[in-house]
Image 1 (cartoon, rainbow, N blue to C red):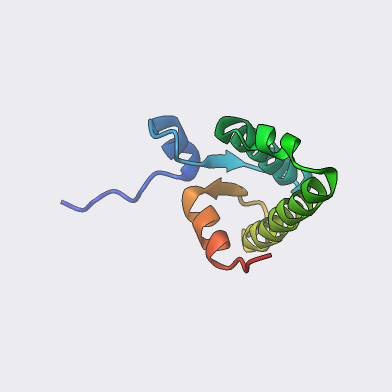
Image 2 (cartoon, rainbow, N blue to C red):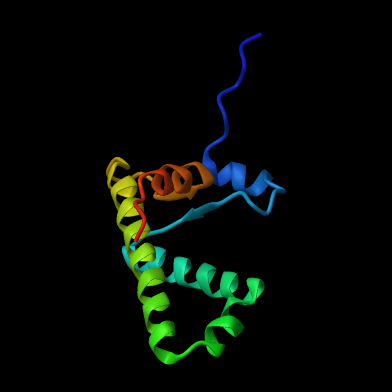
Length: 109
């Protein structure tokens, strides 16, 4: 018997039970930026980095915040390149695989 092709990302998202799977559709760069900022805020809170940052001198906080922002903007640029490869009218869906490919292209900031 022939195997079925994998379901589209939207269908896979409905079937996925793994919280690490990323299946999210974005319409604009601002949508992606907002989502990335939300994820970063959650990460800072869940790891306790927000409390550590608050205990640092303002100058060190600014340096770290600048590096985080540069990394986020670099990742955003890579993700927009990926989204630009989507055919006109296609869904701009970000999966864990898209994020991995973009991360592999990143350089230290």
